[in-house]
Length: 550
Image 1 (spheres, rainbow, N blue to C red):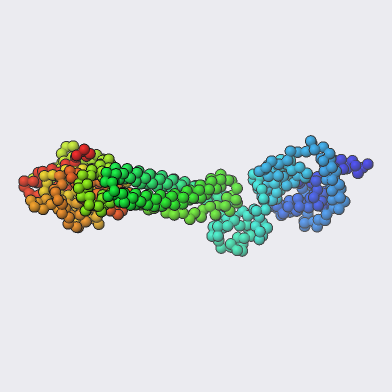
Image 2 (cartoon, rainbow, N blue to C red):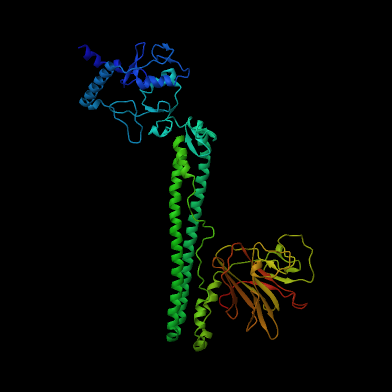
């Protein structure tokens, strides 16, 4: 009967430290019982290095030799079994247990309650009830409590069985106090919190850099898709023009038309394949970077110093990504393709060729832009009209401010507008000029010293010289003859394709093209109206609007 009464009272078998049923109970010389691990930990953590009873505060000069109380152990085991049977008989009285993602109490028996704190000294997690000794007992109050942590064993040094509470800067590892006395003796170490704060600041930088890389690649994908679309539109226009021309020429050009389509389709297919490959690679990099960004963001909000530092080591290593700065799809140039195809039939189709409309010029004229000349760049002897559309050489040199943008050796003037992408077209009239030059110049260029206007020096221009019996132009240091004197010249630029083409607007004839160029800086239209002689020097070069009906 007495045994039954004893078993009915759980207080007789509860450790006053952990407030749970005894686990391997031991008795102190003063007659009080505790779990062996509880009293041992209590004495280990006593800062005064004295062993005393947590209940009666009796102090022992030497740590008592504790032996397991077999009687108390058996009685506690019987009590556990009786409680387990009772719980199984009345399941409605059981605690609801721990929800997924929560940390269970390490002390609870039977149904586990959710832990509210984890002790980094005891290396255990406690529910509100079993946490009470840490709030009451003086020795336990000094223990470090943190929010519940699962897998507390990961916080223990595998070599010394001590808490990982320091960070080695040299080897970028979390270490215990014993590690600093041996393997990491001469390495700089700091507390986990200090290392956490330093590395977290780096994590913000990594997150920003990753986001920036994602944006750059998204912009690159857009540019690649735009390139494919431009290529397709060009191909569609070329094919439509070719159908109109070749249909009129019937059998003579059927074979030419077939070859023409094949060339365009191959160029387009090559462009699409190249772009698709790059897009696929970019999308994969974005996926990888997005995953890393998610990991970085997830880690950024963790307050778990150990998990942060252990995970950060892998996250801060940069992904192996390509430098996309100079990567681009080479946009095929379709300008001139139709013309070259027709030239092959010149011997048999000369009459038909003479009657063909110049669809090429009409097409490039659709890219017309409005440009005006910039007086701040004009050579001091040049005179510009108020609207910035005309320029000619004056009688003398004007006294002007020393402007870094002004030409002082080359008799030229730049447009106010610059272009760094896409396509554009403008027309310049110089019908009464004997000698003049026009084209494009990149920024920066040397404006103060006398240099040749060549691509190597940042100029893509053609130089016109008209005499009584000879019409010629010079481009790329090469001399070319013309059948007629150009009255008005059209300039077409496809920046991303590296193409600059010149046309005689009145005869609708292609004059010359710079191809395969690489442009990395802004391009400015440039006009150079040389002072031919006293009579012609006042004749202006004029920026005129394109008239597609000419």
